[in-house]
Image 1: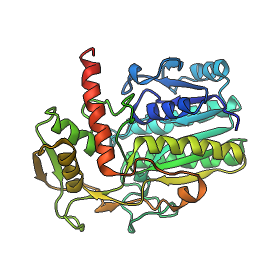
Image 2: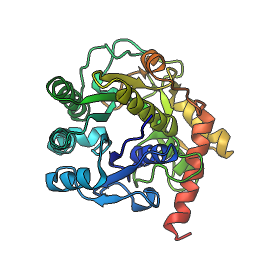
Image 3: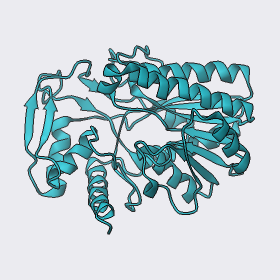
Length: 334
C-alpha cells in the first residue's frame, strides 16, 4: 500500500507520540503539529517535522498541508480531563469541538481525503450494558464526552458532503508506554490510574486515592478496560490503511481488549511488578463514574487485522514503570 504523508495533531502528547512512532516505524511520511501546552518536544522523533502551533491557526494548517503534501490527518490534539471539563466547559468546547471544526474545514479545503479521530468511550456516558458496543446509546454525562461526540457528528456530516472518509476510534482506558521507552505518559499531575500508581511506587506520590469501594463489582471498586497505548497506536495505522483501501467508507470502532480490571486489581499488579506496596486511600465515589466500563471489541477485530501484542496487565504496568524511570532521567538531563 502507498504510504501517504500523514499529519498528526497533538503528536508531541501521550497517545499522539505513540502514533507518530507507529507510523514512522512502518515507513509512513509523518509531520506533527502541537502547541506543546501538554506535549513535549522530546516526544517527537528526530527527522519528524514539528510545527509548534495551534490547530485553530488556519494559515498554519494550510502551510503544513502544502509543504508536507498531507493526505491524511490523525487528530489527537485536545483536552482530556473529565473533572476539568465540568468546571470549564467552554475550554473543552473550544479545544475539542470548535478547533476540530477548524481542522476538518482546513482538511476539506486542502483536499485531504482521510481523517482519523481520537474519540472516547465517554461518548457513551454511563452505559446500561457492559461490555458496551458501538451502537449503544451515546449519552455523555460531561462536556468532555459531549465535545468528542459533537466532533464525531461533524465528521459524519462532512463525510456525506465531501470526498473525505473518517475513522472515529473510541478509546477505553489507555495505559502503558512504548516498549522501547522512546515515549510515554509525561504530563505532570496526570490522572490515569496506572500512571499515578507507578509514580507512587517510585516515591513521586505518597499514595493512590481509590474513589469508591461500593460499586457492583467483585471487589467493590470500579472496573475498566485498560488498553496498551502501543496496541492503540497500531490500530490507528491499520485504520488508516482501511480508509485508503475503501475511500467511500467511514468507520466507528471501540478500542479496548474486551476485558476489565478493578482499581484494586490494577494496584495489586503494580505491587507485584515493583515488589512494593502502594499506600491506598479509600474515598467516596466521584460523580458519574460507572461501575464497569468494558469494550465490546468485536467490530474492530472483524474490520481490521488488529492483533494486540501487549494485552497483559503486568506488561502494561512494566512498560509504564520503565518509562517513568526514563522520564526521571530525561528531566534530570540524563
